Length: 148
Image (cartoon, rainbow, N blue to C red; front, side, top):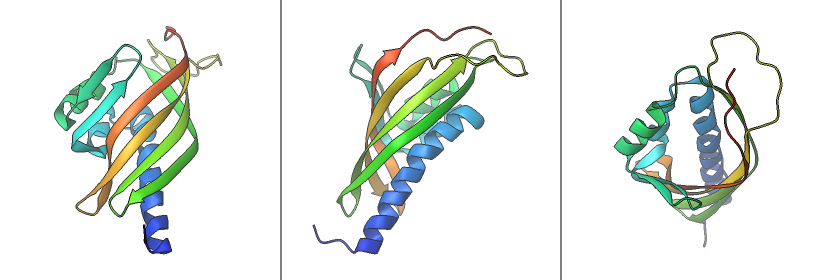
C-alpha cells in the first residue's frame, strides 16, 4: 500500500485520539456522546457472553444508561494503530478500569482495578473524520463494581 508517510501519521494519530476520547467521554463527559465516535453502523461487542450493541442510536442508548452515582477512571496504554488502507485502520489498546457505584462526592479510597483488558478496533474515515467501525472488548481480568 503506497500512502504518503505524513498522511499515514495523521490518520494513525486521528484514530489514537478517538481511542483516548472514548474513555475521556465515559469518565469525564457525557457518556451517551461516545456513540458519536462510532460510524452509523458501528458495533460494540464482547465475545465472552456474546453481547453486541449495533448502530449509533443503540450505542447512544447503551452508554447513556450509565448508572447515576458511578465514578470511573480508565487508563489507556499500548495504543497501536495501523493503517490498513487510505480510509481504514485497525488498533489494539490496553485498558485498566477503576470504578465504584453509589458515589456522591469526595475522594474514594484506593482499591484494585475492576477490569483489565484490551480493545480491538477497526476504523473508517467518514467525511474526513476517523470513526470506530467495530470495537471488540477482551476482558481477561474482571470483577464486580464495588459500592461506595
